[in-house]
Amino acid sequence: MKYSPRPSLLRAPLVVVAIFVLALLALYPGASLRAQGIAHPLPPNAPAPATAVMPGDPPADLDGEVADMYVKGKRLEVVYRNTGRLATQIMGELQVRDEAGELVTTATIVEAKVIGAGRSEKLRVAMPTLAPGRYTLYAVVDFGGDALTAAEAALEIKP
Image 1: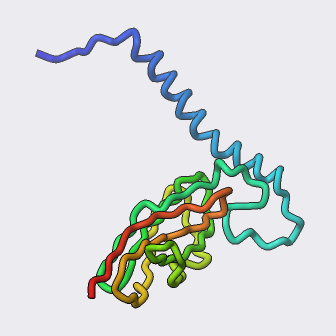
Image 2: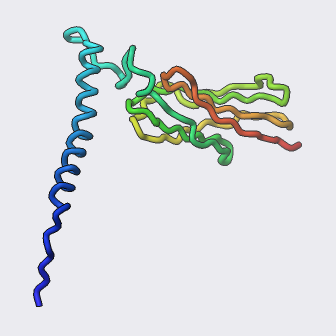
Image 3: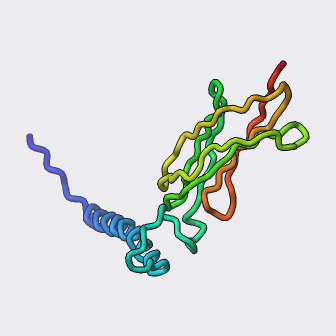
């Protein structure tokens, strides 16, 4: 016996709606790129910008977070995630503060690294040598938005 499915009356309209929605989603990024080109025209023969971020871009397109931070051996690993819609150039530092909140030392985590939209990056920095005591570590990253993003962790160095 041969199986013959009955055509559904809803299948054709659902396919048309799905194609329409996919077409709108496919056109949306192209429309925003054209708008950026109009809003930020480059002079003739100008070099391309280092990143997709240009002055005047809406802050909503720039977003990021320090997703995780942990000590692994003699280094600190920081996971940064670009949650925005544009590639951004990031800079970051590790700040170590004592129990009173005083800055003990800093170390550069990353300097001028481009992270694509929706991408994550594991950044590594050597842990500074610290005297016994309690500290708070802050991994602070500047992604070019209106605010910085950071993560903090408590650290105790025992004698």
